[in-house]
Length: 283
Image (cartoon, rainbow, N blue to C red; front, side, top):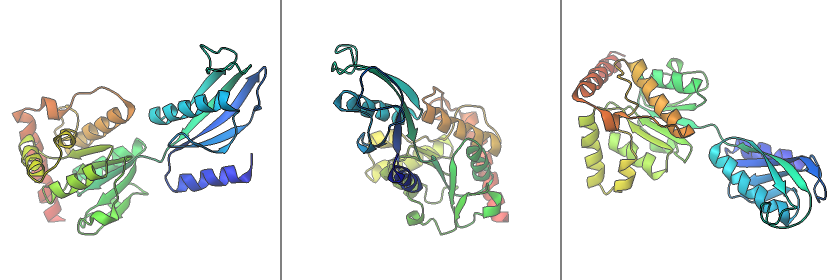
């Protein structure tokens, strides 16, 4: 394979682009491509570089590459080019096995705010493969995992872009909650959550509705954030939130406080939030 293939992969990876590679690992019978042949496929399913065969194979490889990207896992596929009905749709002759590997940027957790919940959230999320970004003027880099990016601007939205692979957790202790939720929704974030009681969550979501937020978008906000674990400490609340993020990312099924909260849950969350406010004031 040409140096251009690998240099393009490096450039796309550095730019946090989503793509897939396809490598022919075995050929049986007639095929225009040979074992070891590779192709670079972009997030739209277009083969940008390389070769995996003609029309018989290319369309099938492109479709499977998109599926692997969506599922976030590699797969070896078998293309039967001898069967017009059950194979790739054209009797080209031969069979091919192709290894398709998706390359996706590391998911990013943007934590807005600081305090014990935010710090625990960063630690646990870092262990589960998330890149950590914290935006808060009071955040201290030393209190977050190594490699975390800490933005100490006064809630500067421009310093922390949001995209489809960004998970956003708002832990501002009620300072500009609605502004950050609007930013997260506008950026089509993968996950948007608010650390607050059910009562406070309703106030914020009602305000967003008054400001013209789409009802479907508001329904996608996890407020209160996290799974119904009965969490009562900052660390347990952080665990419930990361668990929810992982469940959504991996397609798991899990209940949420949004649907199963109680007055007791509200009281516990409020106690922790008030303690975080006191800790922040002491710092």
